Image (tube, rainbow, N blue to C red; front, side):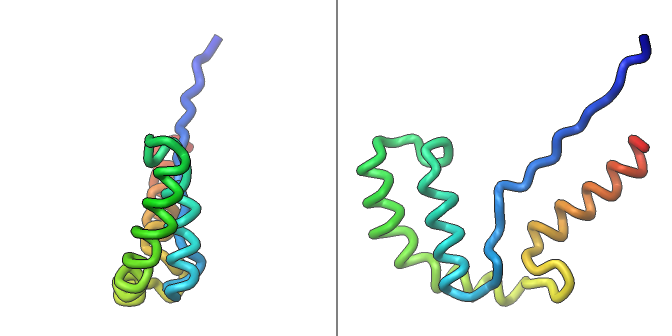
Length: 92
């Protein structure tokens, strides 16, 4: 029996746009995952929703605006698609 190769390529998410609202929403969803910040749920909620998101969403939004891609949006998504295409050529 011929063995098969499988490659799992994951992107854990990206904001929908570089707006402060979308970046804040993305940060909140991503950082409230208990697998990302492994502390008790109440401490994580306070840390993420009361400290990180309110203070980081504005500055992160400015950074996203500076690198936002017209075709793909987030450069993280563009990188993932580029990597997927390269792997597809190699693996077939």
